Image (cartoon, rainbow, N blue to C red; front, side, top):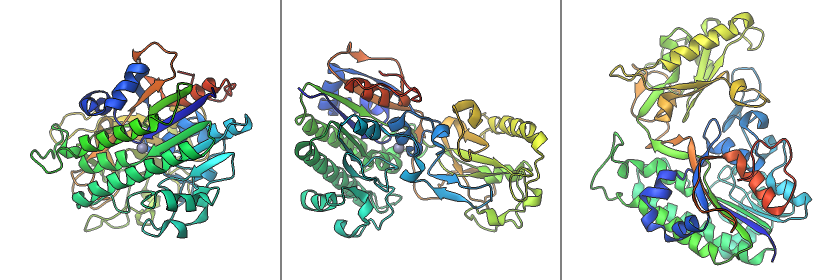
Length: 465
Ligand SMILES: [Zn+2]
């Protein structure tokens, strides 16, 4: 029989949910775990959808890809953050390498694949496709599928197909729950069509619904969440959604044979969000950042607000913080002398790691220097990467707060942050079975190549599982 590999990605799926909390409602997952191996999958630094999936598909770290997050500095001028797309990926992906070996791939919903490029296979791009999510499928930008006629097949087979949920940062949770299920059902419906109708060797899909679910519903499930709501109508929303993922997995597994290697993977995990650290407020308080005028209300940070002649550093919000130094000769109005760069950076790192909560307890902030965690640093990396409170706290970029702490998110309702540990299940009929020690997100691409008997490029950072 023909060797094939099938990977189902559940974005943000946390090992403690899949392997423990919801496992009794996931019989198909449970069976797959019993027939193969499973465990934690360590994500990228940072554990964020972009670049994590593309790091998995190339076995290269964010530094080597030169993609440090959704938005990246395109230049050392202050306002040059650009949103990454597939053109930023300059190294071969799994489907590129497999294509050279005459293998055909079906790629559905993998983040950072837009715009799709010609390759031996079929592609539907991800939630990062720049389009009006409410517009009819067939009127969308043609580059969201390859070949372009695949759009018509989606419209026929799965007319409810959604690239993403138009507004998932919402308080209208009843509608959101319905939309999540509808989106996931439609994506898997089209996945089954591809599995059945196309002559694929490698099949790779990512479902984003699990990520949207966690951010919107985590507080109704996690009793340790500071905003936990018992007896809510959404108590079982998370469990029901995972039951749906499992049901879809069960259907998918009926389309494959014993010569197909099957993997379930996630790009990172999830954990409750305790609150936010206002990174720019903190930099102001500690003498690193000076604004021209202090805003009267909470205001989105912009580099136009900054008095650069009196600023050593500024930061970006998100699930983690990126901090940039204002270096003389590098930034247009830089004031940090290049000879002082390391000293300033080390001092700042130490101060960030000493941040306490409102009761005075150290929150265990971890700060990374890019060159210490990546093999190379292409393009423009941040000067520091910070996980506030070991990712129990997010980074809030907005300014105009009276405190460095906030318990409301500046970009809409959000209950959870990303965690470093994602999960994987692997069944290829060869391994010893059961729970195994933690593997790396960089191990997935070499594992796929190994299954096909294709040489693993030296530049890949992982090893086959
Ligand atoms: Zn993700």
